[in-house]
Image (cartoon, rainbow, N blue to C red; front, side, top):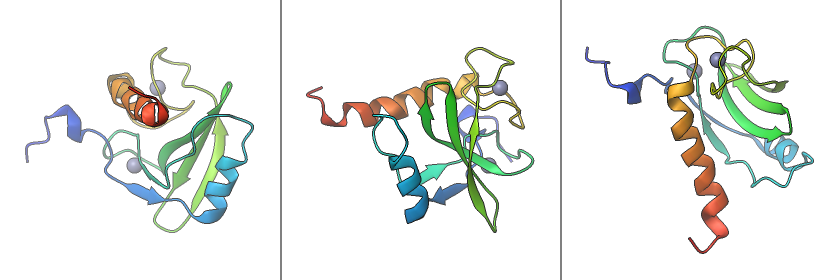
Length: 118
Ligand SMILES: [Zn+2]
Ligand SMILES: [Zn+2]
């Protein structure tokens, strides 16, 4: 086993949102770009509990999609208070994700830049 690269420290689980979940996100009072229908878990690899991916952020509230093998739900959270640049939610399992912040930012930049001339 050679799991010492940081790139593989993120949980590999993915989820495809269903129509109702996409409709929920698109109905939020926020001008953010629409949510991708497939999201990846943003928690530490091997974490406990449900998988979690940030779907949308409305002011101080982050809407996280959380799922297990059998069910998924969307829950509101505030930012993790433990570490300022941690991109995860309050009470998340596993390590703080500040080292992944760059990747998360790049991800949303891609979405924002999709319609710009950049
Ligand atoms: Zn996970
Ligand atoms: Zn944290």
